[in-house]
Length: 124
Image (cartoon, rainbow, N blue to C red):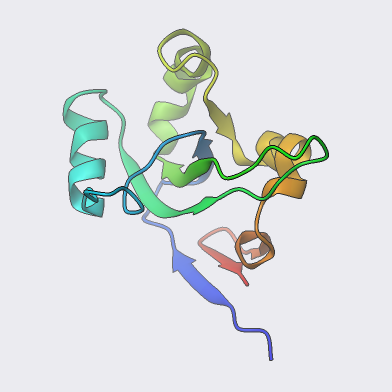
C-alpha cells in the first residue's frame, strides 16, 4: 500500500522552491527547521516554510546523491527571488515546476508531488 503525506502550507506561502545541494536535517550536525527558517528570514530576508529534503537518485549519467531542500516561499518575496535565484544563489534555487521538468528523474518517487489543492501538497 502506498502511503502519502500532506503538508499544509502557511498562508501566502504558495511558491514551492528547491535549493540544490543544500543540507538541513540530513546533515551530520542537523539544523532544525526553525533555525533554517530563521536563517532565511534574518540573514537572507526571505520568509519560507521548510517542507522536506532528500538525496537525489542517479540520472542518465549516473550522477546522484545530491541533497536537495524543498521549501515554500512567501508570495510577497517571489519577485525578489526571481533575480536572486541567479545572483545571490548562483542558480541553485529553482522553482519546483522547473526543477521537476529538468531533474524529475532524480526525485525519489515518494517525494514526487501528486496533488496540490492550493493549500496542501500531497506526496507519496
